Image 1: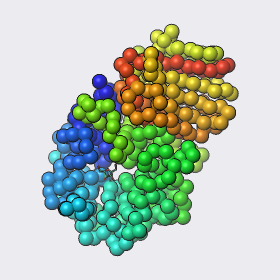
Image 2: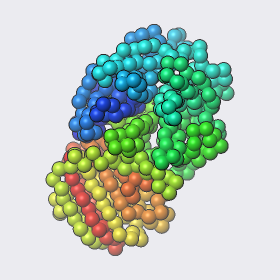
Image 3: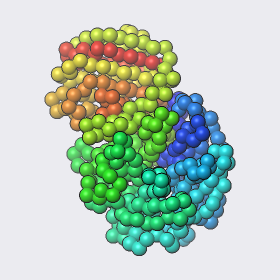
Image 4: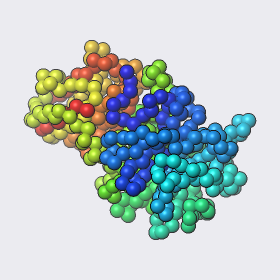
Length: 448
Ligand code: FRU
């Protein structure tokens, strides 16, 4: 009942971080943390799928399983890189002996992109530099000026989180260069990523232990970015990537047309109380998002390949909203769909209820006076509840992807995004607008 239709997830078991994302030999490879046996955070394998178009996915055999001494308690997160025509994966081998953690950064290689041969650790637990604990994981590799680099999540001995930079000529021998983040980022920084868009550096990571401050950092753990160069440790202006409830450990890579694409995990560590567990599966990945920088801010919009999912277009033009408008009268409602609403000069509050029925509704609200956009899932059905808000000066566009048990809401062409799980009833299908003197220039609706 809660299986999503167009989000990546497992038939059975638990999915977490996207791993090893790469466009290689004409195909996109997506790997992800997978416990194929149960909905618990144990027995982490690398699930694997591939596609030519980011829409039609082919399921492949599990790429990595925790079967060796250096990864026996989990093939943890990592990344992919091409070298000499071969596909390499670098991941963290998690080992626990009598409660003591060891971390090994390991390589695996494939010639066909399907079968992977483990090459074992290239950074041993004993190689962890002085001053850092064994919370040392999630290698993200990239190439810059002919040299290989890796950013790695780490914890200092004083139990604060940081990110380390390594470099290598050949991906087998790694040199520890420096810490690349200062400032207070909680007790651990997981899943770092670094890339450049038009020469502007972007450092993405998932800090654990930030305290909520007003509308910021309200989730258990955060995922965000700083616009800065690789070694520009002085810049600490951290911005959350997603304003919803479930979003963590994103990873990016370069797509077919040179675009920067990101997938995130629709989930949150330690939050396992989702109704889908009753069906034996939990969590999914976000849709692929194209990352761009505008006005000193990272924008994320749904990848254009996703337009292939669109079916049965319906369109409304110049809709006057005065009071309540149920889009059912235009034959627009549903559970799995894409919808784009464009507005002209909003100067009062707007409410949009989706997945609404007799009892349930998921409420999207633009609070005009306070210039806030609000996602309210207090009455969404089963599962976690709550309200998330973000500042938004003007509301011009709401772009929604609704899947069986999750929604992704993109505002103003990717200025802000809210991702969340919701678990309404099957027949909670209504889409209802409320407002005063508001004009929707255009509403596009596509079944998926
Ligand atoms: C983030 C994370 C990573 C780790 C992986 C294990 O969600 O905790 O730091 O590599 O999940 O599944």
